[in-house]
Amino acid sequence: MRVTFKNAKIHALLIQAFFTLMSALIPNLETIVIETSLPIKHSVIWLHGLGADGHDFAPIVPELNAANTRFIFPHAPHKPITMNNGYEMRAWYDLFGLSMQHQQDEAGMREMQKNIEGLIAGEVAQGITENNIVLAGFSQGGAMALFTALRHPKKLAGVLALSTYVSLKENLAAEASLANKDVPILMAHGSFDSVITLDTCLVSRRLLESLAYPLEWHEYPMAHSVCAEEIDDISRFLNKVFQAE
Image (cartoon, rainbow, N blue to C red; front, top):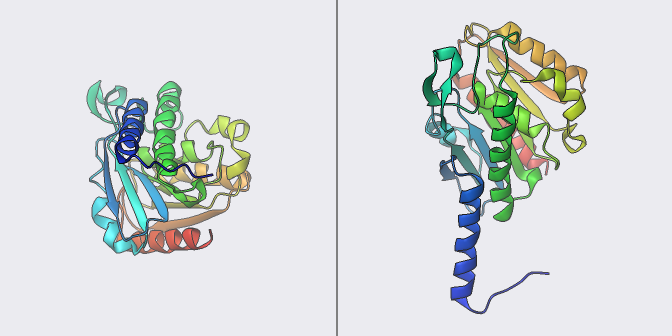
């Protein structure tokens, strides 16, 4: 049943109260929002890499040819990064090193997971169902996108995991959401990446395949970056998963 409000002032106050509540739930995540065309039917929540911000991937939106889509680019909060001698930068969680043998910031990941869940809830509140929401991310943002999406209790449209890895990989099998056991994943990596090496990413690829996730793999002759061919593949993936719903 849909509730309607004859009093426009009451309606406006309720809307204001909702967004005040959402701001309280996700106080650290300011966002850039780009809508490609109306009506909005789909959403992509795209997480940037360590030290970057939400502006990083906003310029590629016109190249993705994703109609009726809202792109949300949140800014990670500033955090001291152990790997960088405590220097503060935008980060989704602390980093102790770039290999999978280094300590991982489990508490930070789980706290940030709640914030990303808050962004998903915000899209649902605007009428976008979870199965029309893609979580995307590059590097540390990609690890956070995978961490959140594969544990999310309702089916999502897909995951874009760019130049990244599966964090806390030893916990995934036990914590994976049944609702997203068949969520489509596009995983892409540069063969010359010296930040998150290809070998590190391949460990994550094999883990996801061993757990029977439907994984689309792409490898490009590039470093820790994004290339034109990859943008074309992302465009095709988004249009495929959104048309499937």
